[in-house]
Length: 324
Picture 1 (cartoon, rainbow, N blue to C red):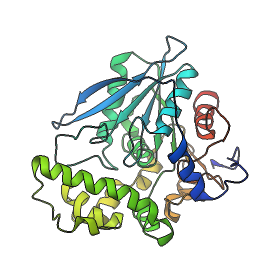
Picture 2: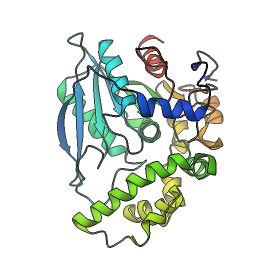
Picture 3: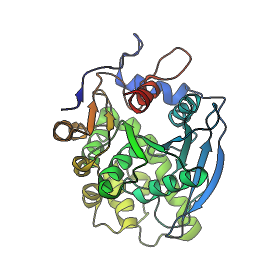
Picture 4: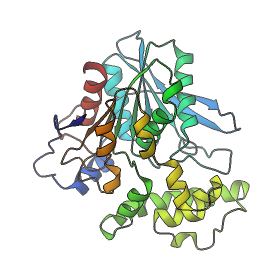
């Protein structure tokens, strides 16, 4: 029954609001003293992903952590850089992969990245093994990348590379429908509009480059919720009937029961991105490999300290992976 009550995140005393905990790291965090080496990996379907590698500062190691970013993030997003920096300081190499269209260059195919594109995480893992024949591979995911990581582990449980030993995911939208409904609420529209603004821009840019005749782009600027966007864009690019079919087939929740390596899900109770079905309590009770931690605070990918140094999320991930 791995429902964990401690340790829990305790926020700075004046920043106990979930919105502040979400926005402060996003707006103000800067992670320096980290240098990536980038390589491009072609995908079997004719696309590509750009992967950034950062070696351990302690020299040779037999361990690597694979980092998967969230919606409209990339390897340069502060939570990715912070996690990469902390693990490399602890003697673990880091691979931070950029999902399709997120590395600064538009991808080649009509579709973009999405919540269920676990094949690209597999490519990032394969890439890591070309760098070195690691003994230990660890997975860490954030938001969309958290759900994708959990889905990958459940989807591939029977054939998982035995070198993949543990995983930690933060702010996982385990049920995409529930998450979308939460973000559609008036109190949380600020987040969905910020993300949809860049997503709409990408769609129009790609239409200019290659044409997207399968999409109705008329009045795309009026799309204000993820369900509308996924109805009009995501589902059509992926061949689904509508957003609901996309959500059913690409949420990690149904796959959690299959996970068979130690996996920690950290979802704060005041996360403005997560609806009730994003907290997989029943699944954690049933699966001895699945650990669920629900701190009262943390917001969405917050979990920060005001003092200089690693965030609570980075320390928590390292403790679960390297110490427990």
